[in-house]
Image (cartoon, rainbow, N blue to C red; front, side, top):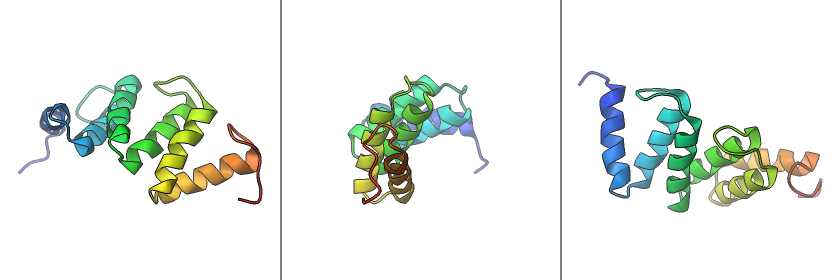
Length: 115
């Protein structure tokens, strides 16, 4: 089957609307990167949020990144830390790293070199 990102977006949209969190996450990635759909960070955040609410650690990580950078959502270091924490608690290694750096610098969380 030939690769067709627009068709993939169509099927992911149907699956996301049916409540499949992985499809919501995949749509978030597609919108964040402009693959098969127009690049739209607000829509990326919307789809990541749906997936995060369903417990997808990669979606929590992605929301942490968006909030840290202020892309598609207001910049909010406390929310970034919240989403990184949710992902880290689910075993996401990059979220754990990013949360550690935030504690090292005191960005959005108390500075704590002992954690």
